[in-house]
Length: 444
Ligand code: TRP
Image (cartoon, rainbow, N blue to C red):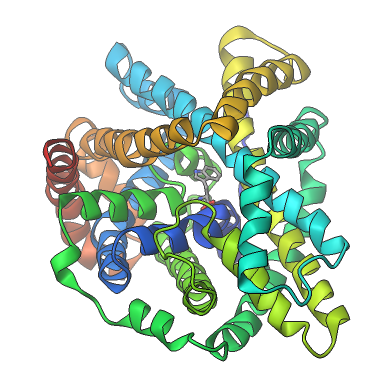
Protein backbone atom coordinates (compact mmCIF):
# COMPACT_ATOMS: atom_id res chain seq x y z
CA UNK A 1 0.00 0.00 0.00
CA UNK A 2 1.41 3.36 -0.87
CA UNK A 3 0.33 6.94 -0.42
CA UNK A 4 -1.85 7.78 2.53
CA UNK A 5 -2.04 5.15 5.18
CA UNK A 6 -5.05 4.53 7.29
CA UNK A 7 -4.59 5.61 10.91
CA UNK A 8 -6.32 4.69 14.11
CA UNK A 9 -8.69 7.41 15.24
CA UNK A 10 -8.08 7.76 18.95
CA UNK A 11 -6.18 6.41 21.89
CA UNK A 12 -9.00 4.09 22.89
CA UNK A 13 -9.17 2.84 19.32
CA UNK A 14 -5.46 1.97 19.43
CA UNK A 15 -5.69 0.22 22.76
CA UNK A 16 -8.85 -1.61 21.73
CA UNK A 17 -7.33 -2.79 18.45
CA UNK A 18 -4.14 -4.00 20.11
CA UNK A 19 -6.02 -5.56 23.00
CA UNK A 20 -8.24 -7.26 20.43
CA UNK A 21 -5.19 -8.85 18.88
CA UNK A 22 -3.77 -9.71 22.29
CA UNK A 23 -6.88 -11.23 23.84
CA UNK A 24 -7.49 -14.63 22.41
CA UNK A 25 -6.80 -18.25 23.11
CA UNK A 26 -3.50 -17.17 24.66
CA UNK A 27 -5.33 -15.84 27.71
CA UNK A 28 -8.12 -18.33 28.10
CA UNK A 29 -6.64 -21.57 26.85
CA UNK A 30 -2.85 -21.24 27.00
CA UNK A 31 -2.29 -19.23 30.17
CA UNK A 32 -4.15 -21.58 32.55
CA UNK A 33 -2.45 -24.71 31.25
CA UNK A 34 0.98 -23.07 31.32
CA UNK A 35 0.31 -22.11 34.96
CA UNK A 36 -0.68 -25.71 35.63
CA UNK A 37 2.34 -27.21 33.92
CA UNK A 38 4.89 -24.84 35.42
CA UNK A 39 4.20 -24.60 39.09
CA UNK A 40 1.14 -22.38 39.70
CA UNK A 41 1.64 -19.13 41.57
CA UNK A 42 5.41 -19.04 41.02
CA UNK A 43 4.80 -19.09 37.27
CA UNK A 44 2.31 -16.23 37.60
CA UNK A 45 4.93 -14.15 39.45
CA UNK A 46 7.50 -14.84 36.70
CA UNK A 47 4.90 -13.98 34.09
CA UNK A 48 4.11 -10.63 35.75
CA UNK A 49 7.79 -9.77 36.00
CA UNK A 50 8.41 -10.79 32.39
CA UNK A 51 5.55 -8.60 31.20
CA UNK A 52 6.65 -5.58 33.17
CA UNK A 53 10.39 -5.76 32.62
CA UNK A 54 10.65 -7.26 29.14
CA UNK A 55 7.37 -7.37 27.22
CA UNK A 56 6.58 -3.72 27.78
CA UNK A 57 9.88 -2.48 26.30
CA UNK A 58 9.52 -4.95 23.41
CA UNK A 59 6.00 -3.67 22.82
CA UNK A 60 7.20 -0.06 22.78
CA UNK A 61 10.02 -1.10 20.42
CA UNK A 62 7.66 -2.76 17.96
CA UNK A 63 5.31 0.23 17.85
CA UNK A 64 8.33 2.53 17.43
CA UNK A 65 9.66 0.53 14.46
CA UNK A 66 6.20 0.32 12.89
CA UNK A 67 5.29 3.96 13.32
CA UNK A 68 8.68 5.20 12.17
CA UNK A 69 8.75 3.06 9.02
CA UNK A 70 5.01 3.07 8.30
CA UNK A 71 5.52 -0.46 6.99
CA UNK A 72 4.38 -3.93 7.98
CA UNK A 73 6.49 -6.57 9.67
CA UNK A 74 8.27 -7.81 6.57
CA UNK A 75 9.60 -4.54 5.22
CA UNK A 76 9.72 -2.25 8.28
CA UNK A 77 13.33 -2.87 9.24
CA UNK A 78 14.74 -2.95 5.72
CA UNK A 79 12.89 0.33 5.10
CA UNK A 80 14.58 1.99 8.08
CA UNK A 81 17.95 0.44 7.33
CA UNK A 82 18.11 -0.42 3.63
CA UNK A 83 20.67 -2.62 1.96
CA UNK A 84 21.21 -5.08 4.78
CA UNK A 85 19.77 -8.44 3.90
CA UNK A 86 19.91 -9.62 7.52
CA UNK A 87 16.97 -7.34 8.39
CA UNK A 88 15.07 -8.64 5.41
CA UNK A 89 15.63 -12.13 6.71
CA UNK A 90 14.37 -11.13 10.17
CA UNK A 91 11.33 -9.61 8.43
CA UNK A 92 10.76 -12.87 6.60
CA UNK A 93 10.88 -14.84 9.86
CA UNK A 94 8.34 -12.39 11.27
CA UNK A 95 5.99 -13.54 8.50
CA UNK A 96 6.69 -17.27 8.76
CA UNK A 97 6.30 -17.59 12.54
CA UNK A 98 2.69 -16.26 12.67
CA UNK A 99 1.77 -18.73 9.93
CA UNK A 100 3.27 -21.61 11.89
CA UNK A 101 1.40 -20.42 14.97
CA UNK A 102 -1.77 -20.16 12.93
CA UNK A 103 -1.57 -23.85 12.01
CA UNK A 104 -1.94 -25.09 15.56
CA UNK A 105 -3.97 -22.09 16.76
CA UNK A 106 -6.73 -23.30 14.45
CA UNK A 107 -6.63 -26.77 15.99
CA UNK A 108 -7.60 -25.21 19.32
CA UNK A 109 -10.10 -23.01 17.47
CA UNK A 110 -11.56 -26.26 16.14
CA UNK A 111 -11.84 -27.76 19.63
CA UNK A 112 -13.66 -24.61 20.74
CA UNK A 113 -16.02 -24.90 17.78
CA UNK A 114 -16.66 -28.53 18.69
CA UNK A 115 -17.54 -27.56 22.27
CA UNK A 116 -19.74 -24.75 20.97
CA UNK A 117 -21.75 -27.28 18.99
CA UNK A 118 -21.94 -29.56 22.00
CA UNK A 119 -23.23 -26.66 24.09
CA UNK A 120 -26.08 -26.24 21.60
CA UNK A 121 -27.15 -29.74 22.55
CA UNK A 122 -26.87 -28.83 26.26
CA UNK A 123 -24.60 -31.82 26.54
CA UNK A 124 -22.67 -30.79 29.66
CA UNK A 125 -25.66 -30.47 31.94
CA UNK A 126 -25.52 -32.75 35.01
CA UNK A 127 -22.35 -34.54 33.99
CA UNK A 128 -19.99 -35.90 36.62
CA UNK A 129 -16.36 -34.73 36.54
CA UNK A 130 -15.19 -37.99 34.99
CA UNK A 131 -17.85 -37.81 32.29
CA UNK A 132 -16.77 -34.26 31.53
CA UNK A 133 -13.12 -35.23 31.14
CA UNK A 134 -13.97 -38.15 28.93
CA UNK A 135 -15.84 -35.88 26.48
CA UNK A 136 -12.59 -34.13 25.69
CA UNK A 137 -10.44 -37.23 25.53
CA UNK A 138 -12.92 -38.98 23.23
CA UNK A 139 -13.18 -35.94 20.99
CA UNK A 140 -9.46 -35.29 20.72
CA UNK A 141 -8.53 -38.90 20.19
CA UNK A 142 -11.14 -39.57 17.54
CA UNK A 143 -9.65 -39.57 14.08
CA UNK A 144 -11.88 -37.24 12.12
CA UNK A 145 -13.78 -35.03 14.50
CA UNK A 146 -10.93 -32.68 15.51
CA UNK A 147 -9.61 -32.55 11.93
CA UNK A 148 -13.00 -31.65 10.51
CA UNK A 149 -13.51 -29.01 13.20
CA UNK A 150 -10.03 -27.59 12.69
CA UNK A 151 -10.50 -27.31 8.93
CA UNK A 152 -13.95 -25.76 9.43
CA UNK A 153 -12.58 -23.17 11.81
CA UNK A 154 -9.68 -22.36 9.51
CA UNK A 155 -11.97 -22.42 6.47
CA UNK A 156 -14.35 -19.85 7.95
CA UNK A 157 -11.47 -17.59 9.03
CA UNK A 158 -9.74 -17.82 5.66
CA UNK A 159 -13.03 -17.16 3.87
CA UNK A 160 -13.48 -14.01 5.95
CA UNK A 161 -9.99 -12.80 5.01
CA UNK A 162 -10.43 -13.73 1.33
CA UNK A 163 -13.65 -11.78 1.02
CA UNK A 164 -12.43 -8.80 2.97
CA UNK A 165 -15.36 -9.04 5.38
CA UNK A 166 -13.20 -8.78 8.46
CA UNK A 167 -15.01 -5.70 9.66
CA UNK A 168 -18.10 -7.74 10.47
CA UNK A 169 -16.40 -10.21 12.74
CA UNK A 170 -14.31 -7.49 14.33
CA UNK A 171 -17.46 -5.54 15.16
CA UNK A 172 -18.91 -8.66 16.64
CA UNK A 173 -15.83 -9.10 18.80
CA UNK A 174 -16.52 -5.69 20.38
CA UNK A 175 -19.61 -7.29 21.91
CA UNK A 176 -18.28 -10.77 22.51
CA UNK A 177 -15.02 -9.83 24.27
CA UNK A 178 -16.78 -7.77 26.97
CA UNK A 179 -19.34 -10.59 27.20
CA UNK A 180 -16.53 -13.07 27.74
CA UNK A 181 -15.06 -10.83 30.40
CA UNK A 182 -18.37 -10.71 32.21
CA UNK A 183 -18.93 -14.46 31.89
CA UNK A 184 -15.49 -15.24 33.25
CA UNK A 185 -16.29 -13.20 36.35
CA UNK A 186 -19.56 -15.11 36.77
CA UNK A 187 -17.68 -18.37 36.32
CA UNK A 188 -15.16 -17.42 39.00
CA UNK A 189 -18.02 -17.26 41.51
CA UNK A 190 -19.23 -20.68 40.48
CA UNK A 191 -15.83 -22.18 40.26
CA UNK A 192 -14.69 -21.17 43.75
CA UNK A 193 -17.82 -22.59 45.37
CA UNK A 194 -17.32 -26.07 43.90
CA UNK A 195 -16.36 -28.66 46.52
CA UNK A 196 -12.58 -28.92 46.71
CA UNK A 197 -12.02 -25.63 44.89
CA UNK A 198 -9.95 -24.06 47.66
CA UNK A 199 -6.93 -26.19 46.72
CA UNK A 200 -7.04 -24.51 43.32
CA UNK A 201 -7.10 -21.06 44.89
CA UNK A 202 -4.11 -21.94 47.06
CA UNK A 203 -2.31 -23.16 43.98
CA UNK A 204 -2.82 -19.76 42.35
CA UNK A 205 -1.77 -17.54 45.23
CA UNK A 206 0.94 -19.45 47.15
CA UNK A 207 4.12 -19.37 45.11
CA UNK A 208 6.63 -22.19 45.46
CA UNK A 209 9.81 -20.69 44.08
CA UNK A 210 11.71 -23.95 44.34
CA UNK A 211 9.91 -24.83 41.09
CA UNK A 212 11.45 -21.91 39.19
CA UNK A 213 14.33 -22.63 36.84
CA UNK A 214 15.60 -21.44 33.45
CA UNK A 215 12.90 -23.38 31.73
CA UNK A 216 10.11 -21.80 33.77
CA UNK A 217 11.47 -18.36 32.94
CA UNK A 218 11.56 -19.17 29.24
CA UNK A 219 7.99 -20.43 29.37
CA UNK A 220 6.83 -17.37 31.33
CA UNK A 221 8.50 -14.99 28.90
CA UNK A 222 7.24 -16.97 25.90
CA UNK A 223 3.70 -16.88 27.30
CA UNK A 224 3.93 -13.15 27.90
CA UNK A 225 5.09 -12.50 24.32
CA UNK A 226 2.55 -14.90 22.89
CA UNK A 227 -0.28 -13.34 24.80
CA UNK A 228 0.64 -9.78 23.83
CA UNK A 229 1.20 -10.86 20.19
CA UNK A 230 4.85 -9.79 20.45
CA UNK A 231 7.93 -11.13 18.73
CA UNK A 232 6.35 -11.70 15.35
CA UNK A 233 5.88 -8.26 13.93
CA UNK A 234 2.13 -8.10 14.52
CA UNK A 235 2.56 -5.05 16.72
CA UNK A 236 5.01 -3.53 14.20
CA UNK A 237 2.22 -3.74 11.65
CA UNK A 238 -0.28 -2.21 14.08
CA UNK A 239 2.32 0.42 14.94
CA UNK A 240 2.41 1.53 11.33
CA UNK A 241 -1.22 2.59 11.70
CA UNK A 242 -0.69 4.47 14.94
CA UNK A 243 -1.13 8.23 14.76
CA UNK A 244 1.85 10.56 15.33
CA UNK A 245 0.16 12.15 18.33
CA UNK A 246 -0.46 8.86 20.07
CA UNK A 247 1.38 8.07 23.31
CA UNK A 248 3.20 4.80 22.66
CA UNK A 249 4.00 4.14 26.32
CA UNK A 250 0.41 4.60 27.46
CA UNK A 251 -0.93 2.43 24.64
CA UNK A 252 1.55 -0.31 25.53
CA UNK A 253 0.82 -0.19 29.23
CA UNK A 254 -2.94 -0.09 28.59
CA UNK A 255 -2.82 -3.14 26.35
CA UNK A 256 -0.62 -5.05 28.78
CA UNK A 257 -2.94 -4.33 31.71
CA UNK A 258 -5.99 -5.46 29.74
CA UNK A 259 -4.30 -8.62 28.64
CA UNK A 260 -2.90 -9.48 32.06
CA UNK A 261 -6.22 -8.96 33.77
CA UNK A 262 -7.96 -11.22 31.30
CA UNK A 263 -5.42 -14.00 31.71
CA UNK A 264 -5.40 -13.87 35.52
CA UNK A 265 -9.22 -13.87 35.66
CA UNK A 266 -9.25 -16.89 33.35
CA UNK A 267 -6.81 -18.60 35.72
CA UNK A 268 -9.11 -17.92 38.68
CA UNK A 269 -12.12 -19.22 36.80
CA UNK A 270 -10.44 -22.40 35.66
CA UNK A 271 -7.95 -23.58 38.31
CA UNK A 272 -10.46 -24.06 41.18
CA UNK A 273 -12.62 -26.14 38.82
CA UNK A 274 -9.57 -28.17 37.80
CA UNK A 275 -8.92 -29.11 41.42
CA UNK A 276 -12.61 -29.62 42.20
CA UNK A 277 -12.93 -32.02 39.27
CA UNK A 278 -9.77 -33.86 40.31
CA UNK A 279 -7.92 -33.08 37.09
CA UNK A 280 -4.11 -32.92 37.08
CA UNK A 281 -3.18 -29.19 36.74
CA UNK A 282 -0.38 -30.22 34.38
CA UNK A 283 -2.83 -31.96 32.04
CA UNK A 284 -1.65 -29.85 29.11
CA UNK A 285 -3.46 -28.22 26.22
CA UNK A 286 -6.80 -29.90 26.98
CA UNK A 287 -7.03 -28.33 30.45
CA UNK A 288 -9.83 -25.83 29.86
CA UNK A 289 -11.84 -28.26 27.79
CA UNK A 290 -11.72 -30.78 30.61
CA UNK A 291 -12.46 -28.41 33.47
CA UNK A 292 -14.74 -25.66 32.22
CA UNK A 293 -17.67 -27.93 31.28
CA UNK A 294 -17.66 -29.10 34.91
CA UNK A 295 -18.49 -25.53 35.96
CA UNK A 296 -21.38 -25.55 33.52
CA UNK A 297 -22.57 -28.92 34.64
CA UNK A 298 -22.79 -27.81 38.25
CA UNK A 299 -24.44 -24.56 37.19
CA UNK A 300 -27.12 -26.67 35.57
CA UNK A 301 -28.08 -28.61 38.70
CA UNK A 302 -31.13 -26.42 39.30
CA UNK A 303 -31.87 -24.75 35.99
CA UNK A 304 -30.33 -26.65 33.08
CA UNK A 305 -31.31 -24.02 30.53
CA UNK A 306 -29.14 -21.39 32.19
CA UNK A 307 -26.12 -23.66 32.15
CA UNK A 308 -26.66 -24.53 28.50
CA UNK A 309 -27.05 -20.86 27.61
CA UNK A 310 -23.97 -19.80 29.57
CA UNK A 311 -21.83 -22.52 28.03
CA UNK A 312 -23.10 -21.63 24.56
CA UNK A 313 -22.25 -17.94 25.00
CA UNK A 314 -18.90 -18.81 26.58
CA UNK A 315 -17.74 -21.03 23.72
CA UNK A 316 -19.18 -18.66 21.12
CA UNK A 317 -17.16 -15.82 22.64
CA UNK A 318 -14.03 -17.99 22.64
CA UNK A 319 -14.57 -18.94 19.01
CA UNK A 320 -14.94 -15.27 18.07
CA UNK A 321 -11.89 -14.21 20.11
CA UNK A 322 -9.87 -16.98 18.48
CA UNK A 323 -11.19 -16.09 15.06
CA UNK A 324 -10.20 -12.42 15.27
CA UNK A 325 -6.67 -13.49 16.26
CA UNK A 326 -6.58 -16.12 13.52
CA UNK A 327 -7.74 -13.57 10.94
CA UNK A 328 -4.86 -11.24 11.77
CA UNK A 329 -2.40 -14.14 11.65
CA UNK A 330 -3.60 -15.03 8.13
CA UNK A 331 -3.59 -11.37 7.13
CA UNK A 332 0.18 -11.22 7.79
CA UNK A 333 0.72 -13.93 5.16
CA UNK A 334 -1.72 -12.41 2.67
CA UNK A 335 -0.06 -8.99 2.87
CA UNK A 336 3.35 -10.56 2.39
CA UNK A 337 2.34 -12.72 -0.60
CA UNK A 338 0.64 -9.72 -2.19
CA UNK A 339 3.59 -7.35 -1.68
CA UNK A 340 6.32 -9.77 -2.61
CA UNK A 341 4.78 -12.02 -5.26
CA UNK A 342 1.85 -9.95 -6.44
CA UNK A 343 -0.50 -12.78 -5.57
CA UNK A 344 -4.18 -11.86 -5.35
CA UNK A 345 -5.95 -11.96 -1.99
CA UNK A 346 -8.00 -15.01 -2.95
CA UNK A 347 -5.03 -16.98 -4.31
CA UNK A 348 -2.96 -16.15 -1.22
CA UNK A 349 -5.79 -17.33 1.01
CA UNK A 350 -6.07 -20.64 -0.87
CA UNK A 351 -2.34 -21.21 -0.65
CA UNK A 352 -2.23 -20.41 3.06
CA UNK A 353 -5.25 -22.60 3.74
CA UNK A 354 -3.51 -25.56 2.14
CA UNK A 355 -0.17 -24.94 3.90
CA UNK A 356 -1.44 -24.07 7.39
CA UNK A 357 -4.35 -26.51 7.13
CA UNK A 358 -2.02 -29.36 6.23
CA UNK A 359 0.38 -28.61 9.06
CA UNK A 360 -2.60 -28.24 11.40
CA UNK A 361 -3.84 -31.72 10.49
CA UNK A 362 -0.47 -33.15 11.48
CA UNK A 363 -0.63 -31.22 14.78
CA UNK A 364 -4.14 -32.39 15.40
CA UNK A 365 -3.29 -36.06 14.93
CA UNK A 366 0.12 -35.99 16.59
CA UNK A 367 0.20 -34.31 20.02
CA UNK A 368 4.00 -34.50 20.00
CA UNK A 369 4.19 -32.41 16.80
CA UNK A 370 1.72 -29.94 18.33
CA UNK A 371 3.83 -29.59 21.47
CA UNK A 372 7.10 -29.25 19.58
CA UNK A 373 5.73 -26.65 17.20
CA UNK A 374 4.25 -24.61 20.06
CA UNK A 375 7.50 -24.88 21.98
CA UNK A 376 9.58 -23.91 18.95
CA UNK A 377 7.42 -20.91 18.07
CA UNK A 378 6.62 -19.56 21.52
CA UNK A 379 9.75 -20.36 23.48
CA UNK A 380 12.34 -20.02 20.77
CA UNK A 381 11.22 -17.97 17.78
CA UNK A 382 9.24 -15.27 19.61
CA UNK A 383 12.25 -14.73 21.87
CA UNK A 384 14.70 -14.70 18.96
CA UNK A 385 12.61 -12.21 16.99
CA UNK A 386 11.95 -9.98 19.99
CA UNK A 387 15.71 -10.01 20.59
CA UNK A 388 16.31 -8.89 16.99
CA UNK A 389 13.74 -6.09 17.31
CA UNK A 390 15.27 -4.62 20.48
CA UNK A 391 18.77 -4.89 19.03
CA UNK A 392 17.51 -3.10 15.93
CA UNK A 393 15.98 -0.27 17.97
CA UNK A 394 18.93 -0.05 20.37
CA UNK A 395 21.87 -0.38 18.00
CA UNK A 396 20.75 0.19 14.43
CA UNK A 397 18.25 3.01 14.79
CA UNK A 398 19.56 6.41 15.85
CA UNK A 399 18.87 7.21 19.49
CA UNK A 400 17.35 10.53 18.45
CA UNK A 401 14.83 8.78 16.19
CA UNK A 402 13.80 6.42 18.96
CA UNK A 403 13.49 9.40 21.33
CA UNK A 404 11.33 11.23 18.83
CA UNK A 405 8.91 8.32 18.58
CA UNK A 406 8.70 7.55 22.28
CA UNK A 407 8.34 11.14 23.42
CA UNK A 408 6.44 12.36 20.35
CA UNK A 409 9.27 14.80 19.64
CA UNK A 410 9.18 16.07 23.20
CA UNK A 411 5.41 16.58 23.38
CA UNK A 412 4.91 14.04 26.18
CA UNK A 413 6.67 15.39 29.29
CA UNK A 414 6.31 12.18 31.29
CA UNK A 415 7.86 10.12 28.49
CA UNK A 416 10.66 12.69 28.17
CA UNK A 417 11.50 12.05 31.80
CA UNK A 418 11.13 8.29 31.45
CA UNK A 419 12.98 8.08 28.16
CA UNK A 420 16.39 7.19 29.52
CA UNK A 421 14.97 4.39 31.62
CA UNK A 422 12.94 2.99 28.72
CA UNK A 423 15.86 3.30 26.33
CA UNK A 424 18.16 1.53 28.77
CA UNK A 425 15.62 -1.27 29.04
CA UNK A 426 15.38 -1.54 25.25
CA UNK A 427 19.09 -1.31 24.56
CA UNK A 428 20.57 -3.34 27.40
CA UNK A 429 18.18 -5.07 29.79
CA UNK A 430 15.84 -6.62 27.21
CA UNK A 431 18.45 -8.06 24.82
CA UNK A 432 20.66 -9.39 27.61
CA UNK A 433 17.79 -10.90 29.58
CA UNK A 434 16.20 -12.46 26.50
CA UNK A 435 19.54 -13.88 25.38
CA UNK A 436 20.27 -15.31 28.84
CA UNK A 437 16.82 -16.89 29.04
CA UNK A 438 17.17 -18.36 25.55
CA UNK A 439 20.59 -19.81 26.31
CA UNK A 440 19.68 -21.26 29.72
CA UNK A 441 16.55 -22.72 28.16
CA UNK A 442 18.67 -24.63 25.68
CA UNK A 443 21.32 -25.68 28.16
CA UNK A 444 19.05 -26.71 31.04
N1 TRP B 1 -2.08 -12.92 21.32
C1 TRP B 1 -2.99 -13.88 20.77
C2 TRP B 1 -3.65 -14.66 21.87
O1 TRP B 1 -3.40 -14.42 23.03
C3 TRP B 1 -2.34 -14.82 19.82
C4 TRP B 1 -1.45 -14.16 18.87
C5 TRP B 1 -0.14 -14.25 18.89
C6 TRP B 1 -1.81 -13.27 17.84
N2 TRP B 1 0.36 -13.47 17.88
C7 TRP B 1 -0.63 -12.86 17.23
C8 TRP B 1 -2.99 -12.78 17.36
C9 TRP B 1 -0.61 -11.98 16.18
C10 TRP B 1 -2.97 -11.87 16.32
C11 TRP B 1 -1.80 -11.48 15.72
O2 TRP B 1 -4.41 -15.53 21.63
